[in-house]
Length: 151
Image 1 (cartoon, rainbow, N blue to C red):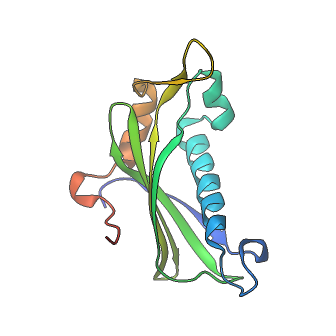
Image 2: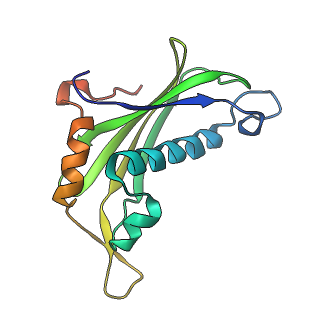
Image 3: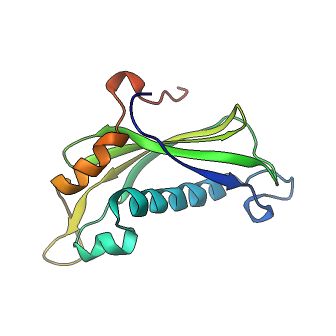
């Protein structure tokens, strides 16, 4: 990979798991959301709350996930995030979770940069501000490095 990858260690906890002792799949989305929040704080210096102060946000508009192997209580994993595609007003984030050499999950999540419309209820698409784009560029994959999910 020629781009930067943000990563964190992840311990699978009992609270992540179902009665069979494997990660209950919705818990992975909470884990990925926490990873995203840390990525934004560490890379942009803006968390979900701080972004709102700029009257903009990055809601998720699409998500695709492959669960490739079960996660179990006590697993020591590594969660990674980078940008699969950076458009004018949208971004596609790529996530993976590995336990050792074993891939447990891969996911792509599309977010759109928006601001609230004049009525305060509806959203309008917004170009990603240049200062944010500049901080995201080092984490952006080249077109030949895009995460390939199963069909």
